[in-house]
Image 1 (cartoon, rainbow, N blue to C red):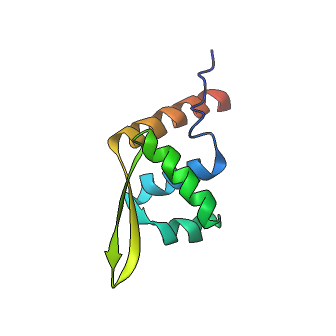
Image 2: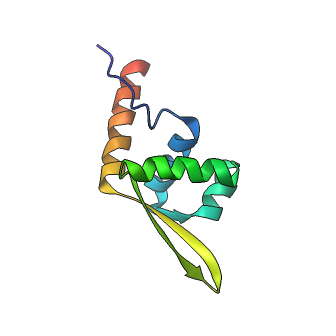
Length: 93
């Protein structure tokens, strides 16, 4: 029997963000924007959805007198990603 895919991670942009964070641990807003080629508004919306589910933590502050948004994956986010990958593997078999 196939497992249901996590609808939060099944979105292409959210999956790209989480995948990048799994590999790198953390990132900042501009780096995620550059990597995904998504608009600022779209990235913001998707980050809020991931933060609401506690998959990521967002820290806003300043770096060199400029606003800086840092994003870090949480243990909950790592676990959710690993479960998603396991579910996808069932479909591939």
